[in-house]
Length: 170
Image: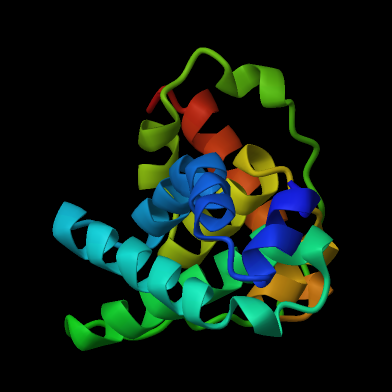
């Protein structure tokens, strides 16, 4: 991927297109955690791609392309979310006991059903953490938040999922 990023930074349109093809499903999954309308999701993804293409030369480290692109996407999602009459994610730094969590428990369930029970910010963080395999530190960088806040949000979301699982909701 890094080779394509270097080519795209030099203006290679095909390399940029190839990069977008590699991450387009990830962009969709992340946007879907924040927005509900398919039209809004498509618009935000298009806006993100255009913004990334125009500012590709500003990317400092080719290995950070995906994180950089996701950061642009999240910012665009927040802007769109505000425009449609809702408020941006509000995150608080609350200490809470860390729960153990078995990912195996989730294998038999539909991820969309699981995510429905979570708050908007939790959906985004869980998607980045479990589906995109970002670390808490990387998510904190993408969302410009404290790493401990991310860890707390992950723990709270896992607790909700576990409680719903035990309560027979899934």
